[in-house]
Length: 202
Ligand code: VGL
Ligand code: ZN
Image 1 (cartoon, rainbow, N blue to C red):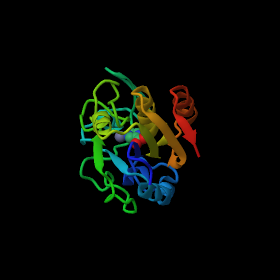
Image 2: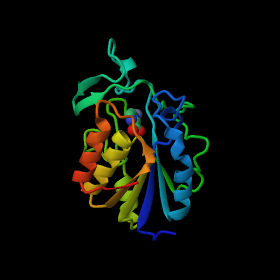
Image 3: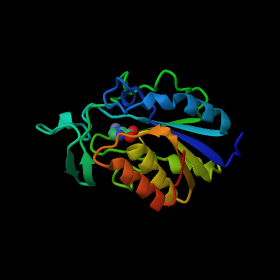
């Protein structure tokens, strides 16, 4: 068992990001055995859940004429317009049935404000509205984080970079993640994580 100052953060292992889902990540479900095994190793375990209202501004369907995967300008910067996914209470927003959710200490939901997306588990996409996860981890005495989940190049990378900037020691286990890889986003995310001091391990 890892010491109590280390936490496992499992990012968005939800049906919509797995094969058959609305924003399926290739092989997204392949990470499940390793993620479940890791949960047994860590004293502190947090799951995140992408959790959008139906009128969410990140959905292409809410921008007449916009194609999924196009990019628009939001008040907080550029935003990819996604297929409608992880709508609050839908089957797609539920955790994958094989994910061991019972051992989790905390489930943190993000992206629930209609006007702003939240890739990171720490801050919404304006990079300033906190989710509360930092306070939870600090008050539990956590200093080191291991991140796994979906998708490597969006929610995992944004979470890892924010965590490193907040002063946590961060490792991403790439073998327990899968990427969307939109227009080179995976290579960019890997470089950005490395530059932020995130340790990338297989
Ligand atoms: C994610 C795109 C939109 C993710 C969430 O979990 O990486 N990507 N919403
Ligand atoms: Zn989302």
